[in-house]
Image 1: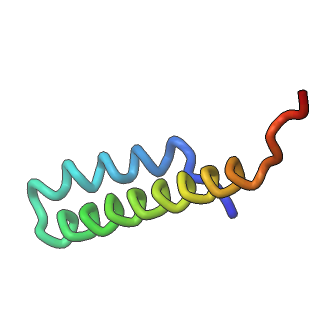
Image 2: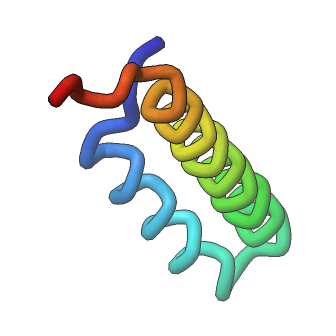
Length: 59
């Protein structure tokens, strides 16, 4: 799964600026931000799941 790069942030920032002028750009920006938040939450959950599956260190 490809990870978003710096271009994603630039695109969302551009849509935010255009959102002040265009209703369509505003809706696209809202959808993009929601998608980014869902992706971040999914990655965080997957990371927590992997951490829980690891064995504790042996003493």
